[in-house]
Image 1: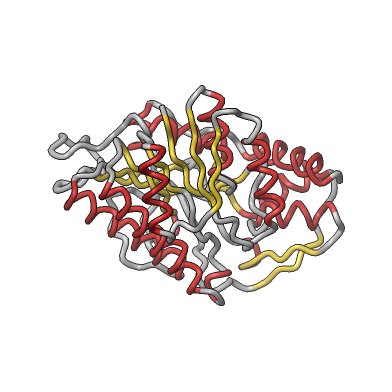
Image 2: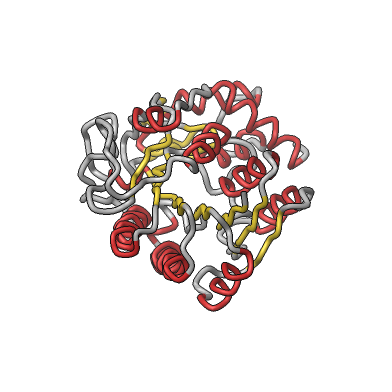
Length: 333
């Protein structure tokens, strides 16, 4: 099969492309190489993917509509997986315009291109931040989501709503994923697990918000891409009978699926696991809650399991050890 993956030099995009290529698929990648974090890491990921002869990278901004249309016409992918986005909750406090451009406008441009040249299945990334101020746990795809707490969440909710309207109007099958705190090798330097590891190994202080009184549904990246790979075959169909607890739209070939580990972990326990893997203790700076953050995330993954037969299960001891080993090797520490 031929896939087009946006955000191919990103953390999750890289892992997904590598999995698809290893399985013998052709992958066309698009990445704008936005300098939100060290572009050399993104280039290193693309270099790894370049070892596969069936990987074809393209470096441009998704909002370049004519260039995107020409690429779809030339490559004619059967499936598109849209992972490109401006991520991060805290960055949005100072740079909201980046989220409007890279999340809302880029997704709109892609949907317009797919409207002109439909594909078998369009899969797009959303976030657990979509649940916002919801307190009923675990989070279910059928929960109302009307209380985003930051611009990042608001823009990803916007892409869900826009995606549903395109599915309804033009019958393009669309699956949205809501990711829950993904971590693992080749991770993003702006994420807590990366910053904690870097600081601990270099003897610097780590900032721990809300004095560590938070829980996250930490999801190992290999589990995440396994779930995405399996969901490719689970194309929503108009008029399809929904299962119990299914988020399948009644009026469009559109579905939302949580991808998480379904096991919330205390932040302080996660830090302790990083300390164990690093072989040294962290120097801790306990701080108040950061604006826009949530206290707890917890995915209900019943729908994912019903659709694919798969449930993420990698524990933090394994996942953190793998990340720290990669970090030491990549940075020579």
